[in-house]
Image 1 (cartoon, rainbow over the protein chains, first blue to last red):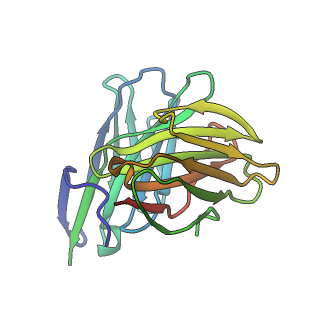
Image 2: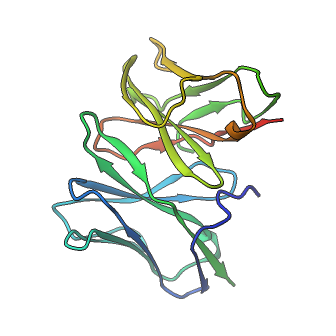
Image 3: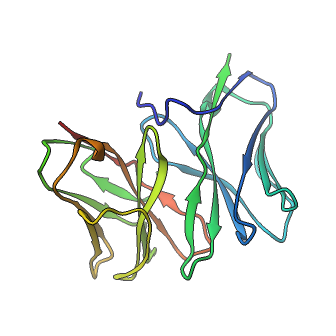
Length: 113
Length: 112
């Protein structure tokens, strides 16, 4: 498959474990945050989002936590599966006239059977 | 399937040449965004269109240009290509600024 990055932070977990992927954002004015998953050879795929008036949001097997005080975002994946192996990006909306989505550098998640 | 279609999937061309990448957004989405993904730079925002009008510019080189047509499809034109332009180019579409973007599977451009 195609690599999307050679120097990404990597998180290696065993199948069935819970995974936590962290992200720091820089702009305190950002008010909307999204986690994307990118598998080899594919475009980023939306996982879950959260707005700045919330500090936690849950989806199916995933939870996003937002700590605005320290500008930190995390993605928790419960019961990680081999199919979860991918690069995970956090993205923020920075209002600059017209909103544009700015991506972090990504974390590679490797799940071993 | 995100509903965003990009063509071609792969493109190999020589330095100095010009190429056009095409994107059809999801049905109903008025906004189209172009991103460049290279190994050392991650996903970099290039440009955004909304209903045919340019709305925001990111790190787009002067050699690159884009447009969105009345049927909402968009084209990204890359000219005077250099080796460093080799990358994945993604198109995304969205309903409004504060909703998730949906990405196509990209065009892999290789400049030799």
